[in-house]
Length: 69
Image 1 (cartoon, rainbow, N blue to C red):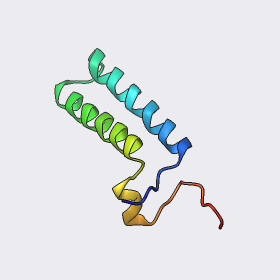
Image 2 (tube, rainbow, N blue to C red; image 1 turned 90 degrees about the vertical axis):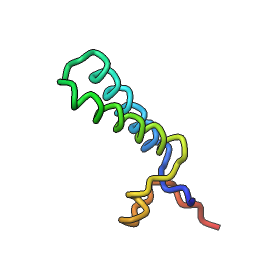
Image 3 (tube, rainbow, N blue to C red; image 1 turned 90 degrees about the horizontal axis):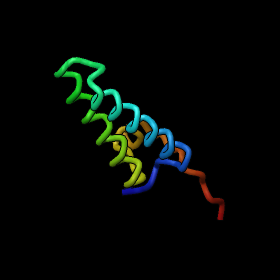
Image 4 (cartoon, helix red, strand yellow; image 1 turned 30 degrees about the vertical axis):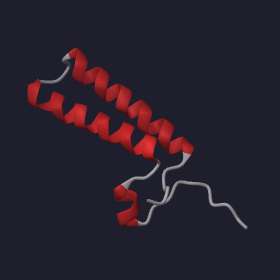
């Protein structure tokens, strides 16, 4: 897969994942929403590590810096 997630976007995704995990773990939301937050955190971490977001591919978004050759 082609990389379409830039470094700033990766940092933002990791921060969102940490916040979602904190909210879910501390029980600030009710039970069904905990699982949603765990899933969101997992997806954010996975896309940050892979450097590719399937939704970005569908909509043609690319936050990587383009290298001119």
